[in-house]
Amino acid sequence: MLATGASAQAHNIRWWEAAMAVGALGVVSVFDHGVDDWVQDHRSSSSDRVARTFRNGGQPEVVFGIPGGILAAGVISGRPGLRRSGGRVLASVVTAGLVTGALKEVTGRFRPDDTTDQYVFRPFSNHDAFPSGHATMAFALATSLSAELHRPWATALLYAGATGTAWSRLNDHKHWLSDVLAGATV
Image (tube, rainbow, N blue to C red):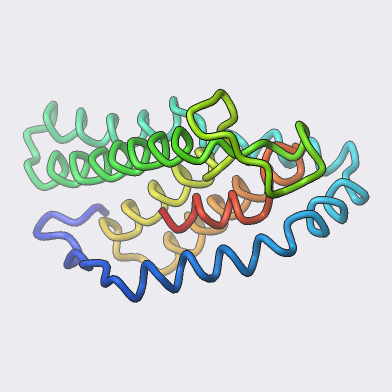
């Protein structure tokens, strides 16, 4: 059941938390090429099938459809708590999408299927690997739904699905490890 009252308290991000996240992503980026090589060396038709399923967790029809459906159900049923929950989840994924779009534009990172060098960036170009939009949207949906549901089992399933979505982007050779971790962080 979705929360009917106030949702979880918002967390204001402190400067040192943002600095730690950026620093951690910098450290992780050192391993981007090695992780990409390992994932591609172990890629198979089975991993591609699994990735096809998990990839959907970052698709617009999923990340906007679920909160939109909750919001519509709340409006149609006359349940203001359900409507508010849907609105909060929708606001979360929209905000995450806007932040990610801006970051993609200003970083212009090349995808691993475009280069073997994980440090190739061309800001304000069509290169948009950083951060992973699929990972961003899957984790934004998981985080906001989890905050509304207040059920540990649902939280575990939602984050497992988001992690699967992030992994699918590595398997599909569309993102570096630091791209998907940055997406999950947004």
